[in-house]
Length: 423
Ligand code: PMP
Image (cartoon, rainbow, N blue to C red; front, side, top):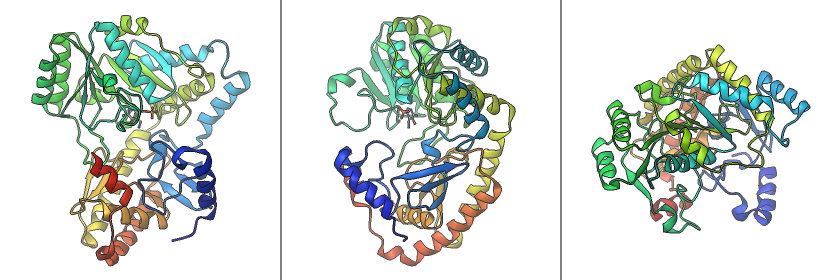
């Protein structure tokens, strides 16, 4: 394993001035020890850590990198807007241009409210639904991630139960459990949240059962509740529309973020007229929500999404990766569970209940210049090529061989074990 002195130095400095040395989903506490915490640059499909190591990046910044880091057309649109103005006393014309573009592209949407992070969009969805219906209870699938606000954060620190008093759980893809949760809500149901597909951490992914999606729509229609699809992670990675168009179901609200400006900071709540009054009734804003630069980047990103074959290409590349990894694993006596859409793969090992094999494999991949995640779904992007995918498969072959050799000596990751034990 190559030493990473600059990363070590930054971690030591960070430990003094940042709680835990790092916070949030990009902290490396729950990754193998050799994973770098800090990166100095990114271009196309690659990232460089602060010690100059280059990695083919299958995390894509946890989603925002959709077309390649530093896309020149998108960044030129952002730079042109920056020269005119960014955060001003009022929004620029790009706000209206962007909202019109999104309403044109997303079948269920009649209106848009822009914001900054995915959590802003999911939280506004919740409050708009309550304002629209005058009801309180909101159903969320067990294990689904919708952000870091008190009503949805997966970590209980600092949260009081009253903040979640009107949140109930159901099992994704399980019609009976959804019906039971709706029945238990009585006449107080404001909304049902659904991820486009089951993309929970630490687990196999599952595509949405159309019967479940249709039943969620019916139950909302019967009770007057709002159906919310949280497209923050999967948006524009499955289809150039709201992801549930794939199962023929239109929500009242959809939350978007991460990728639609290819990494420039912007998110959005999109809604149908069925929830316009609710959106008009809530107070939602932020100092940076109206900044024009990310809007210009979003408009250019959306143009490229409409006019290029990025989606079909990432699906082809995802298929190539899935087949190549399965074959390489089998050559070394491993069997993988590769689940979810090929362009958003979750890769777990059979017979690896405490993830020790997955961690060792991710570490061996990192050594070979490929950044994969041992328990979170990954992402392909439009800047990847067949050569990149073949490079990853070749690295995987070497990584499987290395893990096979040491499989008897592996230990589980201590911090991860204490976290999983705590749940
Ligand atoms: N919803 C989903 C499905 C997500 O994946 C995420 C982020 N991982 C969020 C909401 C929250 O987005 P953000 O981190 O931008 O607040």
